[in-house]
Amino acid sequence: MNLARVEGRIVATRRVDELGSARLVLLQPLDEHEAPVGRALVAADPDVRAGAGATVWFVNGSDAVDALPAREPVDAVVVGLVDRISGAAP
Image (cartoon, rainbow, N blue to C red; front, top):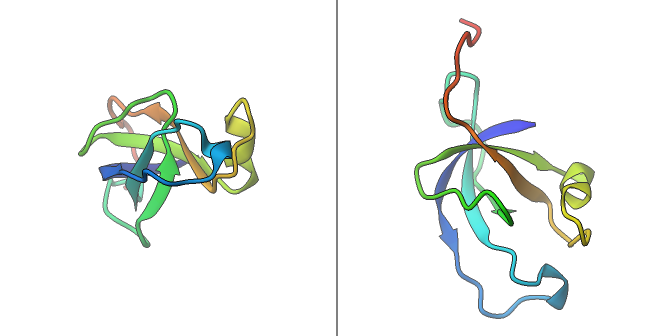
């Protein structure tokens, strides 16, 4: 699992039928100190409904497909909303 900050929502009116009504968000991956790392990516957010600025955790790759009940064709899925991080490594 990976940490990220939601940067915004992706609105796509035309997409493959397999995505259904899955909500799409733009994520900025974060390290354990919540500092940005790497490039932003698009993820499905089917249930968490995280808003801009929220810290979330997500899965990607084959874990992303397994995280969705209908196995939609995605590379990343938001699976939880982070309330706080405590005891992070120095």
